[in-house]
Amino acid sequence: MTTAYFVAGTDTGVGKTLVAAALLQRAGLAGMTTAAVKPVAAGCEVTPDGLRNEDALLLQRAISFNLAYDQINPVALALAIAPHLAAAETGRTLTVAALADHCRGILDLGADFTLVEGAGGWRVPVNRDETLADLAQYLQLPVVLVVAMRLGCINHALLTVEAIQRDGLSLAGWVANSVTPAMDRLRENIDTLRSWLPCPLLAEVPFLPDQDYVQAAEFVSLPPATGPGSSGRQRTA
Image 1 (cartoon, one colour):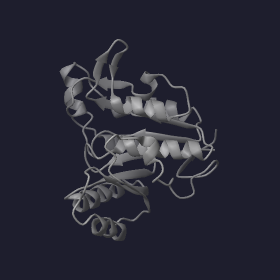
Image 2 (cartoon, helix red, strand yellow):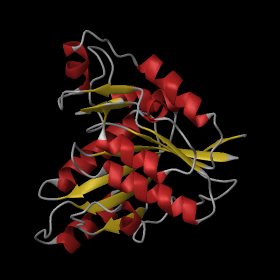
Image 3 (cartoon, helix red, strand yellow):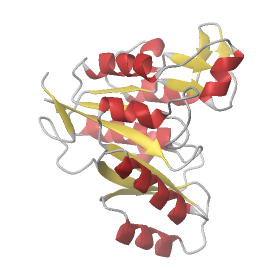
């Protein structure tokens, strides 16, 4: 049996990839094989090997499966803007169906623990009619929500959770990620979110200026009931 989750954030720049890589590291330490896919990444650098995104490269380092870059990040876009706009700049049209097909291919590889990482917040457009929320619905994966601990986080988190639930998806857990060295009333904000969010707190990740996912893994827990043979969405290998 294998397990998989969709990693979403309350906004862009909330630390989704750091948390995803930390979860993958934690799963690996628990003896699980791991895989990941970030179907769309905007803000890629030109390299001799083609466009490369630092978040996708981090996921590639964190997983145990030997996956080529294009398997992890099939749509790499140069401009650091909304994906549908970045794609349009190059004459491309993205579709959720195509992204979902690629994600299913990674899920079907049969790793014990697989993560699909979104881009930006929950309703980031893919084209004029679809958003990345539609991708999560296609895949029917439980969601791990990353909340950036900064002013406004309570409202952002509650609205995102409301949208996820309205889309018919379950929440496997949430992560409080400190994106600044200090936040006024950090403890009180976390406690407020714990009382309001309908899922377990998986981690309180402190501010890590070097974005070290191995260090971050020391603070995270896997979603409840996760382990070889059990978890959120289960697939028969």
